[in-house]
Amino acid sequence: MNPLPRNPAPAPDFAELYGRAPEGEWAAPGRVNLIGEHTDYNLGFVLPIALPQTVRVEAARRDDGLLRVWSAQGRGPVAELRVADLVPGSVPDWTAYPAGVVWALREAGHEVGGADLRLDSDVPSGAGLSSSAALECAVATAYADLHGLGLAASDLALLAQRAENAFVGVPCGIMDQMASMCCRPGAALFLDSRDLSTRQVPVDLAGAGLALLVLDTRVKHDLGDGAYAALRAGCERAAELLGLPALRSLQPVGLAAALAGLPAELAPLVRHVVTENARVEAAVAHLDAGRLAALGPILTAGHASLRDDFRISCPETDLAVDAAVAAGALGARMTGGGFGGSVIALVDAAEAERIAAEVTAAFRSAGYAEPRTLTAVPAEGARRLR
Ligand code: ADP
Ligand code: MG
Image 1 (cartoon, rainbow, N blue to C red):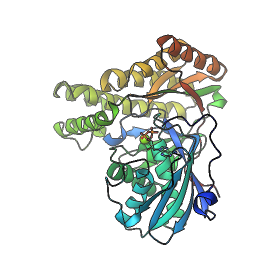
Image 2: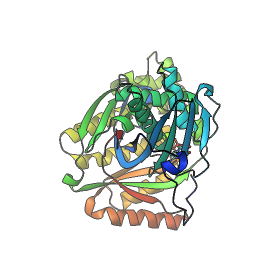
Image 3: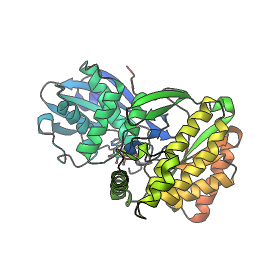
């Protein structure tokens, strides 16, 4: 998203936009995934934490069938859509995310109508930190509350994913929406994407003297859009050739035999997914045993797998990982869908500032724009604020 103007005029509040007060305000967080990349749509394991950064939505119902939306990050005029006219492909811009949620709710049989929505966010957009799921989950939670739908968090995550898959047209897995809906403060969400069962795994970074840096490289290579769908199709094709319902069903012990029978272009995809699921399970075992530092090598091995087998890294994310590890990080990896976005680095808390500065210096030397640095603290999932 374009940077905001240097001295932006104060943003209009809900009353200035819509001439009345909102009925409430809801928030849903962005996320970083500790480990388990491109495993969700293969029905495997993921281990995300929610970020303190959220998308917030103030909302009030309307009874005339209109959905009106405004975002402090877009700063355009109020967009107005007719709920009854919403069909996939009908909404070309960012308003497809909130409109898609309303569409998905109605498709699922919930008799919800229009609303006035005012969005604001501090989740960097397009940075691999899942601003899109945060936006969907904030709107889904607001609608569910306002209409008393009584839906479980995982049902809302599925509806938000359906909005992104079918209405926006992005074939993402379920991790981002489950993370935004279900994460808890101080914990990572161990999610089994096959049955959506979850376990909160305590992650006390500060207690272990550690910190998790998020280095947003600020690059997003266009290649990403079509490539994601192609990778997903490749994984599904491999599972079919192996006679499995999904790659999740392949255990490490059967990997070598499976790889031998696969076309050369599919074998590395399978190797990534199988080894990545094993890395999630290993990471959870270390967390359960209070061995947080042992996550470091798992992160770095995960990055090598994304770079060499899944081939979705890029020079900027490789540099951020290499520079962080060279500067003394315990481990680092790209997080998110790939082709840019953010890198996470597990570091000694006392070294965090120096390591971030060394990554920044490496970017400067390479002629890249400076990364934006955040510190991730496992935060709360979607909730009502007032
Ligand atoms: P990510 O989810 O990693 O941030 P995506 O490309 O999936 O990246 O989603 C980014 C898109 O989500 C933006 O291009 C925009 O359409 C929408 N979006 C995210 N945050 C906001 C916001 N605060 N206001 C309006 N649209 C937003
Ligand atoms: Mg997204």
